[in-house]
Image 1 (tube, helix red, strand yellow):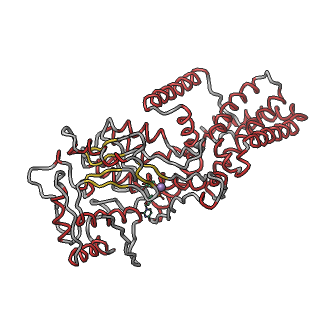
Image 2: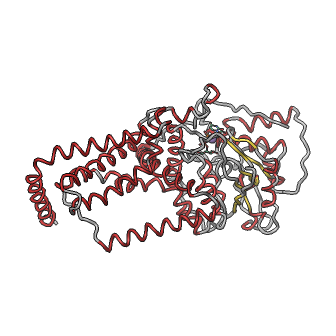
Image 3: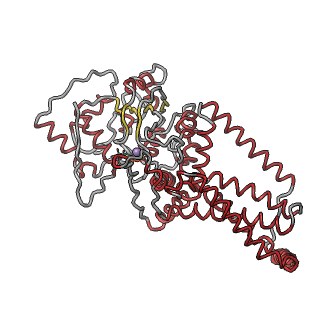
Length: 515
Ligand SMILES: O=c1ccn([C@@H]2O[C@H](COP(=O)(O)OP(=O)(O)O[C@H]3O[C@H](CO)[C@@H](O)[C@H](O)[C@H]3O)[C@@H](O)[C@H]2O)c(=O)[nH]1
Ligand SMILES: [Mn+2]
């Protein structure tokens, strides 16, 4: 039986997007089959392996802990991504590394698609492990709304070896189904909070999975070849950034909601809790990353500012820690079976998100906290390849939006800093202390530019098909800044150095005086 549902829309009712749609389907299917297991995939995903429905059953029916397994999650795989995966659409570190690692705790988070659920876990019912003998599955009246047929179906949904016979859709059933689909059905019920998909959070998946884990259920990660499900990903820079904005904004919303991992019950594993905390606060790191990326502005004026140079021991510790972090990264990458190239692409896209998208997400959250109003998150728009000969046309389309500005500014500042550094070396001579110091800074600048390289290609649009153009522009920009620096400073070297020295002293005495 294939059932297509067209939902009622009524003024004054929020239709709650995907979460609302899923909850309607969950209720309607309860009267049609009431299957104890439910599989969910997005409209832009499809089943790619005929075993996709059978494999998760192995986990669900596992005699050891199957009963307490709420859902089985597959990684997301995509068809239409450009071969270089410029914007890390495959997200391999997240799907194959992070999710696999969580399997060792309470299980992967719910990722919105490619998921098999145990129906009663979606209803917000406790796992058998924590259920007291003869506990009533429907806890209070009105919890699931007031459809008697639906409420009567709940105990049956918990019996996993029940055989299912197709129902006869008669007038009575049709009326019941219509009731379950109306906007007003959920009024005063637990739907959208303690039952079904969770509402009012841009990432309904993470928060719904969280509620399930919080009750003490576990989940399982299931990866198979060929991939169980495949889908479509946005390969246009702007669309991809909007997607990441929805994810990072949604994460912060989770943190500032009653689904905060800090206040979850003790059934949530300690490390799983930390993972959820990380998952709901990560955009905040942008405060540090963005500051670091803009620090090179000081390079341009450094004679007039007193900058504490990092001393030897500090540098040694810093280098050791960075090396260790990357060493662990390499181990994790090898263990999860992804390539170093995939890992590097993820690093690159992390920097792109952290400079442009996360600050916007943080601002959005602040605004929401102050005004109480969220902004509308648009859908991830799909590719338009059908009307073009170029399969990856979307990759070369630039749609300028404010979201692109911060990262562009970071690129400009760091290119200028490299130019200024070369200018300085030329002005003072290559083997002076000054040149040595600016060289250190240049390593940092170049590092940032390497990470932001895919973004630079992206904003070049069609020109991005020939990366050599980008290198020519880069060399030209660096030369122009360097030349400008030399022209402005060379004739006055002596004088400027004097000014610098006195300014340096002034700021030194100034700060010690005020401190
Ligand atoms: O009003 C809406 C909007 C979306 N959807 C469904 O939600 C899915 C996800 O939306 P999409 O625009 O494809 O977003 P993506 O960024 O591709 O989705 C990822 O991120 C979402 C959370 O932000 C998850 O819900 C998805 O499962 C996950 O694949 C769509 O495919 C639809 O099936 C609806 O049913 N109604
Ligand atoms: Mn999608």
